[in-house]
Image 1 (cartoon, rainbow, N blue to C red):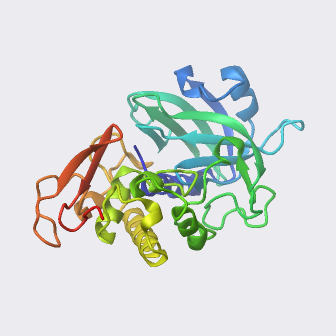
Image 2: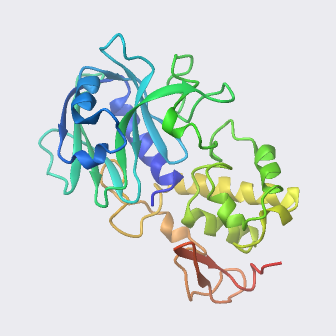
Length: 309
């Protein structure tokens, strides 16, 4: 599943063309990709066509596009996109070769007048597009990351209802390390489970959790409550560093599921120390990396460096 670096790479790739672009037409090729839009395909089209996309915003793995709609009665709305397990958001010029498994095409005219096709591609159909109402953030601060676009705009401190339950991610400038470490002390679950809990912090999945725990020398099942404040802060610093580095490399790709907006793969996989390294020597001590079955997936760790204490 795409994690924060992959989604941020997509956000950064879409923003230049889509910010202040006008939606001119929509092709719905598979209505299953609108399963989270309660109004159905006709309402989806009617609301979006003619609307202007004001920005491209991300919190954790959620992306949303605040809208200036042509309907006076429909305000504080955003197009919300979630990649799910295998979703791709591709930006193409008209006439570009067809992308297999394209589910929805949104035709736009950019601010400079250039036409583009925003193609939502999804193999497993766990991702979705939907129009959602924007609501105030619980702390009165910006809803998510948009690289400065939208500062001072009406939608800056709003967030889609379906994303309002998730906490800020470690790359958010309003992420509160002390608040998160305090939550760790109240949780007896294993630290990896806590890292993946979007009620605690967002954006981290299996890959980057394994990498951060390897750097922090923590076993994935170490109860979060047993971590000292200093160790918790160290772990979050590793998370921030890894996510930043992965964004710089365009994310991590192990198969054909993750692509950036140009259909290219990310390259952070070459920097991994634990995830996918089963049987390879630990880069610290030489002990073979082990993979344990964990929550219907795997946890990769060094049995010597990352002992359960």
